[in-house]
Amino acid sequence: MVANGCTLALAAVSWRALLALNLGTDAKVMLVSAASIALPSLVTLALRKRLFTLPGSALRRIALIHLLRIAATTTLAAMLWAVTLPAAPLAWWLVLAALRMLVSRLPLLPNKDIVFAGLVAFTIGQASQVTEMLTMIAALWLVTHLLLGAILAAVELAQPEAGR
Image (cartoon, rainbow, N blue to C red; front, side, top):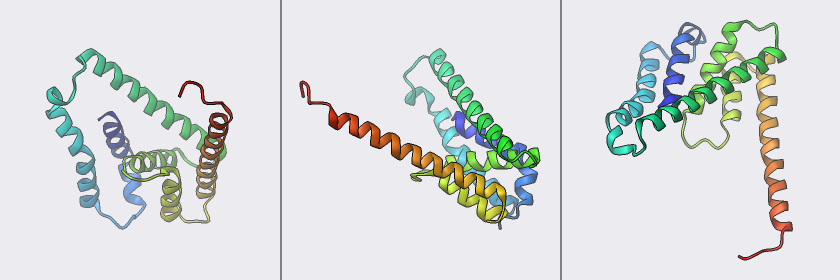
């Protein structure tokens, strides 16, 4: 629910810039998309007594932690983008953050960073420095995950089975 709320808030803040991208959709389609993001959260909120067994204070603490995590990752990503391409205006970083949050809400995508880089390439053109930067970041994330997985698998295979 927190991530959906943050996504909708960021999309609302960058609404005009998102419409200016001419993604082939109009305001009605974007509103229907926003409703599809908000609907699961509203249903969850309506059924909260049946779905959540933790006390309210624990749920609020968990929601705050998620809000801080989302704010931190979005801010750090925008700072990374700003350091990589300092000439780009702040409006670009808001739009990119909103698109990144929207892509992160899509289910069944194994690598959302690559989808996000592709969406940016489609939206602002492949020749853009922003597209190159985001593709590089997505590739670095993928390589990092592959290397970490290989290292963890090698460590696990190197250890003798103890008590299994």
